[in-house]
Amino acid sequence: MIKPIIVGNWKMNTNSYEAYEISSYLVNHINEINSVDKVICPPHIYLPTLHNLVSTSNLHLGAQNMFYKNNGAYTGEVSALMLKEYCEYVILGHSERRTIFSENDDLINKKTKAAIINNIKPIICVGENISERESGSAKNIIRNQILNSLKSIDIDENITIAYEPIWAIGTGIAATPEIAQEMMKHIRSVIKNDFNTNIANKIRILYGGSVTDNNTLEYLSLPDINGCLVGGASLDSKKFSNIVQMASKL
Ligand code: PGA
Image (cartoon, rainbow, N blue to C red; front, side):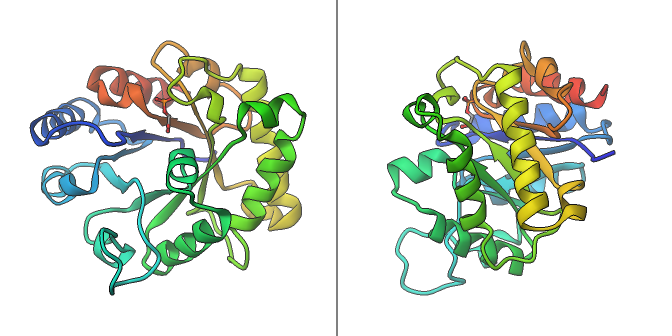
C-alpha cells in the first residue's frame, strides 16, 4: 500500500505567532501518527523557526514555491539549495503561481529538476479552469501539464502530483468524489503510459480544492487517491489534525 500524505498549504497566511501555535499543536496532537506523511507548507520566512520546532517530531516541512537557480541575481527569489536545509518537500506549479505569477509548464519543469537535484520532493499541482472543464478539454489539459512539467525527468515515487481543479480552490465548491476519482485515474494512466508502469503504481496522487474535515473521508476512500492537499482548512490546527487522523484509519 502507498503511504498516504496530507499536505497543508498555508499560502500567504499567519503571523509568526500563529505559525508557531499551529505547528506546536500539530506536533503535540498528531506526532504519534506514523502511517501518514504529514507536511505543512508555511510561508518561507517561518521555515527556520518551524524547522527547530518540528525537527525532533515526524511532522515534515514543505515550501510553497522556489526558483530553479541555486543562487545569483534573482531578486526576491529563494532557491532549492537554501530550502533544503529546512524542507523535505516543495509545492510547484500551484494554480495561484500559474495564474497570478504567470508560471508555465516549462518553468515548473526547471523547478522540478532543481528540487530533485537538491533532494527536495516536489508536489506538482495540475488542474483545469472552469471553461476548460465545461469545454470537455480537462483531461487533455491535465495530461499536457504532466508531460511538460515532467519532461526529461527520470521520475520516481518521491514525486507527488496534486490534482487541484482551479474552480474548486478556495471556493467551497469541492470536486465531487466522482470527478476527483476520474482525474486521479487519468493522472495515473498518464504516468503509466507516458513514463513508467512501475512508478505509476507507487506515485502519490492527491486531491486538493476545498478539502475540509467534513469531506475528507469521501476522497480518501477513492481508489486512486493517496492523500489531500489542504489549503484553508490547514490553517485550523484541529481540522488539519482531524484530516490526518482520518487518513490514518484507512
Ligand atoms: P483550499 O486550497 O483547500 O483552500 O481550496 C487548496 C490549495 O490551493 O492548495
